Amino acid sequence: MTVPAGTRIPLVLKHAISTKSVRPGDPVYLQTNFPVAQDNRILIPSGTYVQGVVDSVKRAGRVSGRAELLMGKIVVVKCIDPARVGRGCTR
Image (cartoon, rainbow, N blue to C red; front, side, top):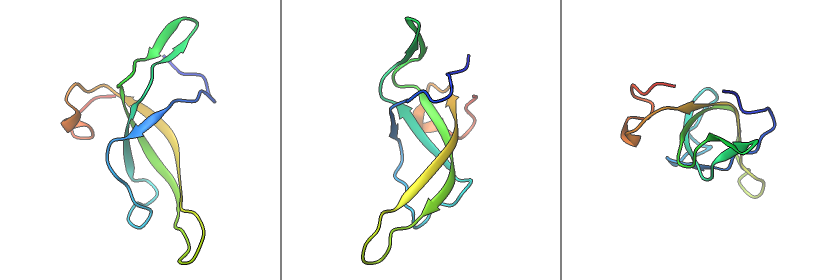
């Protein structure tokens, strides 16, 4: 099952990340906040774990500016135990 490109999916970070330490290619773990539905069918239930990969990082300036972290592809992780996300769970 594929979610159409451009679909907005509200996600919540499961672990804190910092633009000081994160690098492109690092995994990021998130969880869906609301179900994703299309044509009255739930494609992704609320509470589903999701893995993303950091594409680029821009640190904030010392005096002003905003930090920016961009993620590309995200993958739904099928995992019952949230403590195991990223350690042996299947996608």
